[in-house]
Image 1 (cartoon, rainbow, N blue to C red):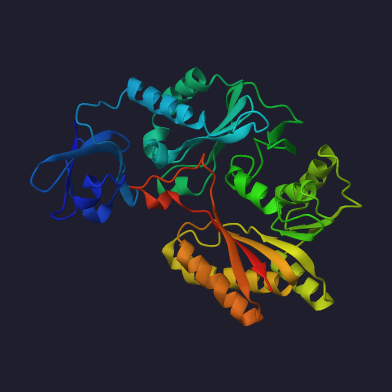
Image 2 (image 1 turned 90 degrees about the horizontal axis):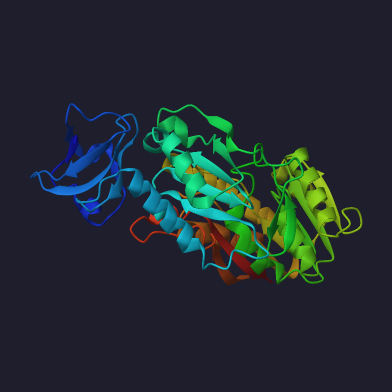
Length: 396
């Protein structure tokens, strides 16, 4: 097998089972090390450390798969890992009234670059790295064997593929296409989902438990759901007894989906809600200028930072939107605020929200710290798996 040899002193993360090896840690690669193929990783003294797949075109040159020298990366390897990932979700209480959840979470499940979500009898899959891209046909075959879906939709349209030297791709990969009126259940609530054209893999599964937690504070409240997408937080709030929900999003199409979800769940989009399309920052400024007030403000913006170079700009954006949200809260109101930017740490995010509260002249108590659901586990040796963080605050 081809080998990659590390620089002196660069073996510690590998020994601690971190699955990434960056270009600066590598001293040499054998001439037969081909992009996408599996290589053995050696320390500077020639001691075997681990095995993973290789891509010299990426900043992450090796993504590690096994620390067991006797474990070949063959068909049985991928089948075992997929079955283990499926089995780990079996006891999470995500069945019954919930039909959509993540089945495979890349490095956290020992399958770097592979993301698989279940939506009822369909799967969506993302092949995000060259290593899994080169095994696409095998992995599709094994996904069908392990999960027995009606169909598999590919959503390999994430920007991260470009860093691997891969083009974007999406469409039906196997089996039946999902029906036009496809729905999922989440804690008993009904949501229409577009697996072929929706954002991410069709829906924001990572916020499932947070929607349930925040809904407990919705009773009798006027709710602002900013960056609402198809309005899931709003549905939960109404189910929790909210008096009225205002969904704000840049997408007319997403807001139409929010209205459809309200009707599916027995709510009146005219009497119990309103939908406003536009730049969320500008819309919230107009609310401020009009003197509008809400009792529960939910801020769930898209990713503001994709790299460390963008953190400073993202921090300004998060502070601005939280300052606006805090200014719209009635005394005693609740703020549920989130960041899905992995490079923005939980500590930094809390400092940003604190700064916004100082500038707004509002005292805020953290009632709960929120994160991604149990189907998005965080491997202790891979803290990068933690990207979603949130604060639920009571604001005086």
